[in-house]
Image (cartoon, rainbow, N blue to C red; front, side, top):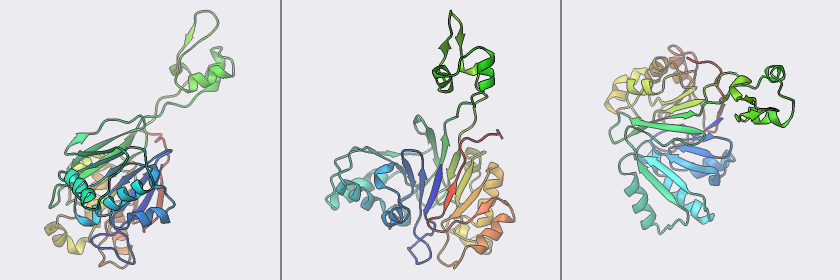
Length: 307
């Protein structure tokens, strides 16, 4: 799994940072979290195809998180997209999309499914499931937890040979999780030659929020927590007033969640670099990083150990 940080800034586009957007790249599709202004250009810089995007998750309807969405849909339409697109967001996302497309005369020829979420577990795909939960911000806002499906255990060829399964097509069937029949009536089940199943990779995305222990509970054990850190701790009161988080508070959520890694985004334009955020977060949670635009984090899949 590849995570591409298309934009890590907030409020307004700047030379240093684009607006919030994170692409989760799976084998055949891309899940996009937030779509700030300029997201199309960032996708091009990252060499990611718009046609691979199957689902878009919008955390809330402040402009720096959603104003890139209408243009993205418009471009998909211009490119004659036929693949369905799902958009999940807070209350108001349906009217925002409907009204914007109508006023700009965009009529997508592909299926556009829009869901307004609160606290819910969205239907599981074959590969993953996504949980939504309320964030604490000044407008209806969401956080998201993505969990990949469990992966079957590793195939043990020695066990297969020991119980009499000949090398060849039968091995492949067992590796695919299918039972086989040997000569006679004996049935061999995959569990006899496969190790224990392993947890898939997982990612939590905070959106804009003040310190929220409920997110830590929902994100327990995630491979990567992507959390907003608009300010550093000397502006803790300002963060509280604006319902945002500091780098230290994001790190505290990572500790509570027992996350494996923390990535801080949504950095205020007042900060020229990421050094202060990184030092503050690492003082609490060592596995903290502050990515720049277009940085990539690779997550191994599956996760081998339980929490």
